[in-house]
Length: 520
Ligand SMILES: Cc1cc2nc3c(=O)[nH]c(=O)nc-3n(C[C@H](O)[C@H](O)[C@H](O)COP(=O)(O)OP(=O)(O)OC[C@H]3O[C@@H](n4cnc5c(N)ncnc54)[C@H](O)[C@@H]3O)c2cc1C
Image 1 (cartoon, rainbow, N blue to C red):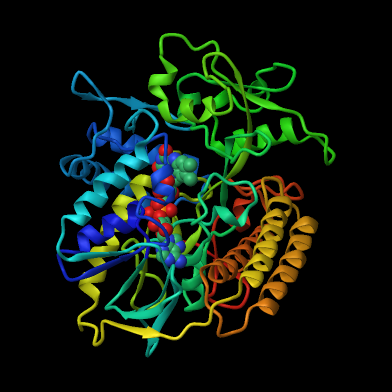
Image 2 (cartoon, helix red, strand yellow):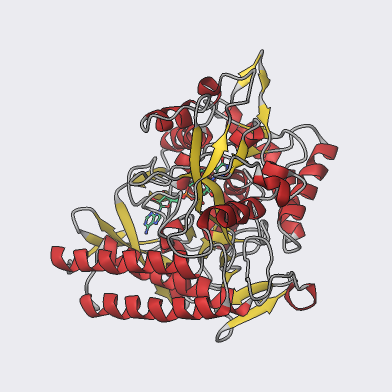
């Protein structure tokens, strides 16, 4: 389920062992992976370099990184990236040598990039080409996984719905959820429309455990112009020297962190929010990204995609202050898995942003997620092949489906918008108990509203997405209420300190009623 970096890498691996069906909600290229700009972090210079990558990853995660997962990520990363290059991925080079950039909380320049700021598109292209060349892999584009089939407590296939509302089911020896994150749960996000957390919700419905759902990373610098989408302005811009300035022209990061603009992402995001949002509603002040002083780099060449996007609004990196705001960007939590993608439900595996190995802890190190998709997508596929013996009996069968009407879909959209605004307001960058509880009450109203419109037998992509968003939002709120401390991306203004005595643990949903905390 999913054709981002984790799904495609998983499919390429699985093709060695059997027939693979890759299902994706829109065209193959529509994924978070496709929009990734800055690059992919990897330590290609031997053991010391790998050890330093581990150190930075652990430090960024604010005490909660699962060390074994991080060791796997940094140690297997170089092999996965070299393999990708051998398969045809073109990363930027100068005189034949790979170019590397730096982003926040990296102690050295280790981030490879492609076409300047289109790294994800190149990774997606090269993996898709590799997958398409395989006879064993079939693609089902513009098709939504709406449910998981279960047989004697095992996941044994998926329910599908295509864009002509045809429903059918496919039996499978195992299912890999690589359906990405859930940025659409917030009104302000860098994520595309497909990122509605369907994989996480389906896994939870099947009884799988979720972990660390309170940790949502907000990117500090999304474009902030009325009517414009929250287009991401990559951290690599700050890596190349961009400053952040408030409406008085001050370089305000001096007041917040010694690493200034390259401080950990959560620190920068909260600083931007504090400078920009003001104390009262409506008391909003602009915050800017400033590259006007940067010399010696042709910014249009180095960042062609970003430059072209800004040009649409008459803005130029060399000439203008660029208005920015934080936006929901990356979910550190997700479906709890071991290091081989196994979930707590037999036959169900997960990898990539939908999964939670604990590798990012409370805060992902920038550019570690594309690497995560490659490393853990391949590992999950190997484990799937090893763990399932019997071939599926049936291949595919059609099912009856009852569509929701256009009017019903419009009403569902209204509730989704309410949910997104609620989550931004009550479970965004700065949280506290009262606000989180208000958010839960608002969410319950949205959920009731959606279930009143939809009949149990209704199936539609939008309905699936609405239900997924409700489930993911509820998991975020419950986990954020339970973690009464501040750590990484989770900031509670009523508990502003990190509390290692009680919370050096991962939150888990689904093992017992409510949220439990476990060390792993
Ligand atoms: C704007 C932006 C910039 C980023 N920049 C970087 C960067 O520079 N470096 C970095 O490391 N990370 C970056 N990230 C994060 C990174 O891109 C993602 O974390 C990573 O690509 C996730 O990969 P994935 O394979 O897990 O999921 P995705 O790439 O999100 O793929 C999910 C797939 O699941 C499919 N899907 C979802 N629901 C369903 C359903 N119900 N049925 C069928 N299919 C479904 C989608 O259609 C899609 O194919 C960025 C993210 C964004 C949004």
